[in-house]
Amino acid sequence: MLRIVVGKPGLDGHDRGAKVVARALRDAGHEVIYTGLHQTPEQIVETAIQEDADLIGLSVLSGAHMTQFKRLLELLEERDAADIVVFGGGIVPEEDIPVLSALGVAKIFTPGATTSEITGWVREQFPDDQPA
Image (cartoon, rainbow, N blue to C red):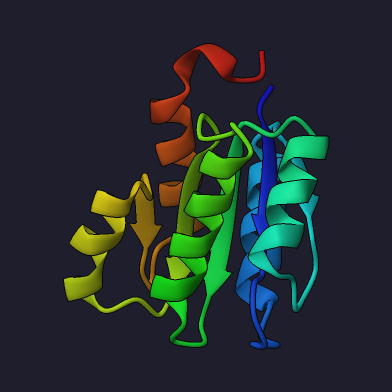
């Protein structure tokens, strides 16, 4: 079973999508820790380390995706936790996705992605860690 932290960084208060994704991942058999609204990258990384997370999923709708993902990845590196896989979703322009990928974000799901796509991607990336 995977441990997945779902974080909602920054000032954006729209968390319905993050909650839907968290529920879908939980329904797929994973342990999910949702950090709630208005979290800093520092708080999300601290939670992921404390919870021994395998993945961090960020929901960013505020337009601050480049800053939020970059900072989170820097913090993971600083804390010797760069093995935690980072993915995310939200309003991210197509041209920013390759830049985020180069920074180390494993996957970005854009608006319209289904929960099946997200849980399927997790299943493909971690085939040995799926619930029985």
